[in-house]
Length: 240
Image 1: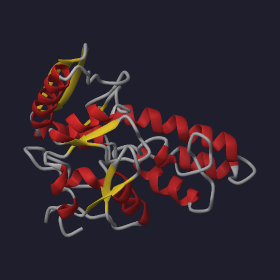
Image 2: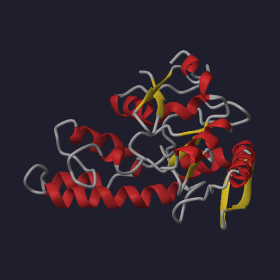
Image 3: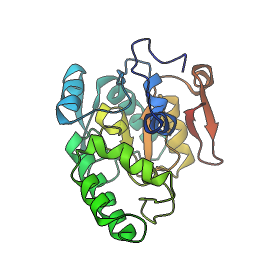
């Protein structure tokens, strides 16, 4: 926590603390990266204000048009070039692998919430309660859903763990910052090593294709309060 910027808005509730613990490595990004100063963006306007405050670069990578903060894009291009020289590829994965809008994160969230209520109403959640929560803004829904999960009423894909392991709550996705990229070759150790050399690391243990631009060497990460978890594929997460 002491390594976070002095003007960082530290979470004041359990849901914010959970999100910081699971997604928070990128708040420590360096190397020209500009991370957000809050755990959750409140709405589309909040995300747009942040995105307009940073320099975003758009380039074609692996045949896909992607958008990232300029420092992240420069590092990625160097990694792509090194990978090509080594006989491997680094290509974006999926239809939205880089910068995302707030509305894109809302769409994924609503789908999981809707499916969860279909699973739990009326056995664990009343129809009235489900209707009340569904009528809230996405920002207001997040603590409500996480509160239900504290009682074992899970909204993940298989309804056996927290929704945050299936989808990032609206306004919390690292993709909104322009510092994240989903990579097709995430299982290739050589690709991971090249990306790490250029400041890109895996920081969300539940999202295997997801890489985060941290803008530093791996040896620097522990000194900022990050710990290594996993075997084979290694993830750097907040040590809190």
